[in-house]
Every structure is written in structure tokens, then in C-alpha cells.
View 1 (cartoon, protein in one colour):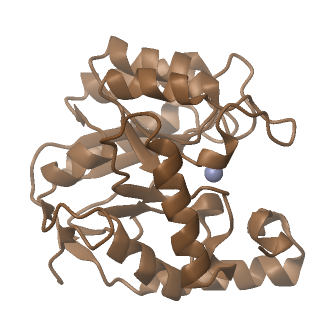
View 2: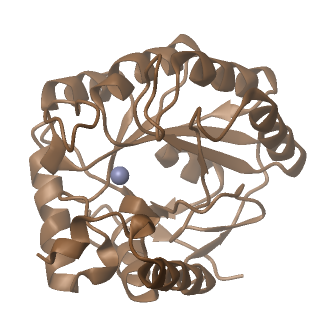
View 3: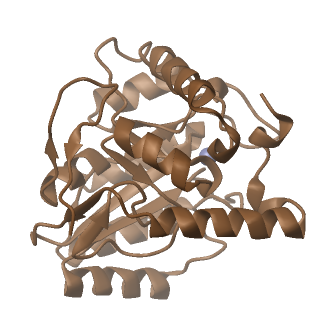
Length: 278
Ligand SMILES: [Zn+2]
């Protein structure tokens, strides 16, 4: 594996960051898995990436207090480890506990690479490895939804991943409205460092008004969160605000059903969702 695969492409040299932005932009323009959303209730989804142990503990607990469940996009190579002095990652036992409580486990690759640099063979092996590691949670588990590590994508890898998974979540800020790109669902970072109650309230109001699907993503849930994490207080407030506004709180899998995505096959390794071009 290339060393550059495991580095955050958003923090490289200026030319590499420009290339990264251009690659993402082109991938987002390649809207090849579009779904015209069924106009149901406005929906809000809370997701966690990597995932830190605190997301499985405090994060899951807060959601459950509101009768909600979240989606946890796990990169299996980090299970139980503390990586790069970052927050402690959840163990298989912790993941099994949230799975048993009805939360969704999604795929975030096994080794957390920037997927753009990978061949399909490398990427396929990495995804298979994640699936087989996370089967330790429960033998019946199938990873149906994906989140791009670092938000990194290219036209080529987006096509590959959207064919393999029901949905892929991007790191591109926005609310999914009217037509959803299941190969790059919009999502907002729920970080104390970048979002406050006023902004969250605005996003929820916009979601209600447009009957949209608002997806949040975060990492650790701690009193003093990392710059990619959220405090229990802000997470609690966001979940409560979504509920008070009358939004349906759903996992990614449930959100897909609510917007009218239909599963075509039960085979985990082929394209599962029938999306309509519009
Ligand atoms: Zn990640």
C-alpha cells in the first residue's frame, strides 16, 4: 500500500490539496446513482466515523435517550486501538453492544486509506477484510452503507463503491433534498469546533421546510472533544432539537427506505439499491 493512502489528503501540500479538491468536485458532478426522494417526513441521521469508543458509549446512549439509533462507520483495522494519539477506538465487544441495541454498523474501509489512490483489487480486498473482521460482531452482519475516509473520492472509485454499497456518504456539506445522490450523500460535520446551536437549528429548520434528509457526522463524543468530535451537550441538544422539530430520527439504512430506495438483491457484494435517474 502506498504511504500516501493513509494520509489525510486534506492536509498535504498546496498542489496535492488542489488536486484533491478537483477530484472530489469531479466525482460529485458524476451523479450516477440518483434517487428521486419520496416526499415523506423530514429526517435527521446521526453518524460516527472510525469509530472512537466514546461514540459507542456516550454517543449511542444519547441517541437512545431519544429513542433514536445511529450509524457507526467502522474502519476495522483500528478496533480496540489508540491511533496516532487519537481517541481510543471501540473494541469488537463495544460494537457488538451497540449492534445489539439496534444501531447500524457501516463500512469505512478496513485500513482507512484515501481510496482515490487504490486499484479496484486493493480496494475490494480492503473492503472484504473489513466485512470479515466486523463479522466478529455478529455473523449475520452485512455492511451495506459506506462513508469515504477523509471524504476522499474520485469518479472512478465513486462508481465502484456506489455499485457495491446501498449508499456512500460524502463529507460534502449539504442537505439531501428532492434528488439524493446515493454515491455521495451530503452530510454536515457535527463538531463543536465548527457548529453551534444556532447553525444546527438553522439546518434543522431548512430540513423541515424542504422535507429533506439531514445527515450529521462526528467522531469522538467527549467533554473536551477533538477538533473532529462533539461534546455530549451539543450532541444531546442536536438530537433533541431534531425531535422537537418533528423530524424522524433514522439510521442511514432506515433513511434510505424512507426516501424510497428499494433493495434489488440481498447479495452483499453487488449493487443493492435500485436508483432512478432523474
Ligand atoms: Zn474516518
